[in-house]
Length: 395
Image 1 (cartoon, rainbow, N blue to C red):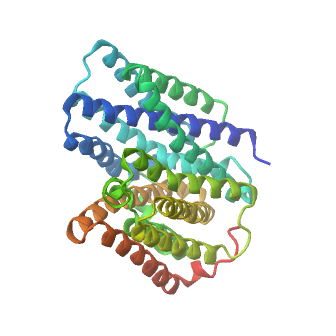
Image 2 (image 1 turned 30 degrees about the horizontal axis):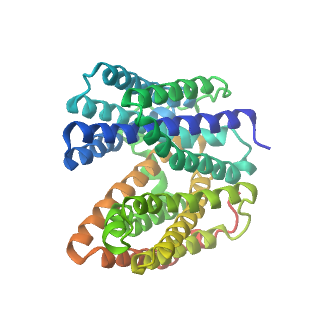
């Protein structure tokens, strides 16, 4: 049975993520309305990524020294402030390009606080035996928000950007209030002074703990090589000849597959052969990307992306559970921060890798090469991290 505090946390994460997704969709659309420049859309992402990259490790140390609820609440308060400014500014007509960039930096700061706090707080809210199911449920709620919130935000945007931001503000406020119903999570006792060594302790711990290192690095390189999201507009227009509506379906296909698998794992948590299943899921992910890359049939492409999302979800649940179980509570914030940094790097650099490779060898060859690279990574990691491959149980 899930604890009352964990149920409240799920709603906090659902509402907070929904608000974030709606806000970012509206922000991108408003920026393009203001400037009409694709460069500015790219800068919106960069302005969020850089502060998150710089501050995630210090945020991880903070998570290990204070009540994790407070860090999570602070991230939501920052996002609520951004939504408030955008609501007021859009209604009054003084939102401009420079202001949006400044607010994107604030969103990056919020992301740096939010990601390690969300990961590290879960083990304190559920019994250890329920962790695999708990992470499957958090992934389920995350996917629901990612699938539904952007579409809802786009629909509401027709009423004006101020209306979307106002809805986001309400979601952030309610999500923050829910945190007060989560039982207090006292910070781990630590007598270590804050130093560069404690700041980098998450990296040192992961390097010594080979199963954790293997799980995090496997995900990093699999997504770095296999990610094809950046090339979906090219596939929709030039390969599959489906147009904008097809792009929307292609972007949502992997999330739908991930949601289905997450719901299944929430009811039927993995019990045995978790290491083997993790590697098999990464291999299936790579194969699905190869199929997508070669496909010229729209339905087959949708199925391939859905399979890739479902396979990736198995890897995500195993990795998140293993990282939290194998990490002492006093280190969870810093280790989660490293994990968050790797996730962000794999997504951002993966899009850069795909775009650069497509420019050099064409989109089809770039996607297929990435899928083959993922298969090669899975094979090498089985050899280099045998303790992870042979892991039978998470608990």
